[in-house]
Amino acid sequence: MAPVILVLLLPLTNLGGGAPLGTVEKSWNQTFVVPATDGVVLGGMLYLANTQVNGSFTVKSCCGYSTNDIKFSIGLDYVEMKSYGVVVGNLTFSWNTGVTDKFDIYFDNAWGQVCAEGVCHADPSNPSSHNKTIELSVREAAPATLFSLITKRNIIIGVAVMVGTVVVASTIVIVVIGLESKKASRTFANRQKHS
Image 1: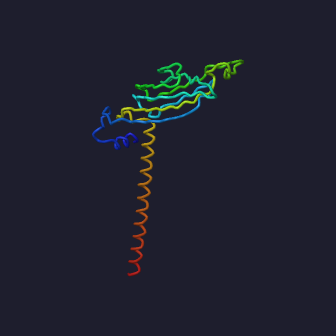
Image 2: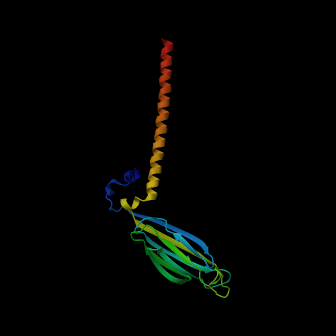
Image 3: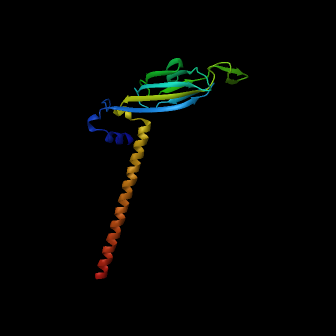
């Protein structure tokens, strides 16, 4: 039923599965810290196939260090990844998800560390082994077609809209029937009085 709602919400001239319905876009910014000896992974937000991802970020070292370096990659684990290696200062990047509807952005600060007995900690002698602040800006854009819009997320939203509509319509019908019933009862009582 949810796909039916999605179809009803789309312009009638674009009901063909591959017919373009325009472009869906999402831009977002985030600032965060990647701890020494650790990493941060962020996922995309559109969840549509053929999403073109364009972004940039700046790396800032903490604690008086000036290395401003981090390892960076983008893609989807176990499917396809693009590694940019060690980035110093800033980077502008791009990625296309292709047939998949997901992607992840990886910031790796897990180098420049000392490990002993299974425990790792920052190496004070390594100038790269400290927290890094990332200022990230991302723009996602994907072509919208009927098939690309029928996702699990959109189906859930469609079902929620449908259930909400049915509940509101049922409530209105019950209230109207109740009012009509009271009106009919009063009319009947008035006729009984005058008889």
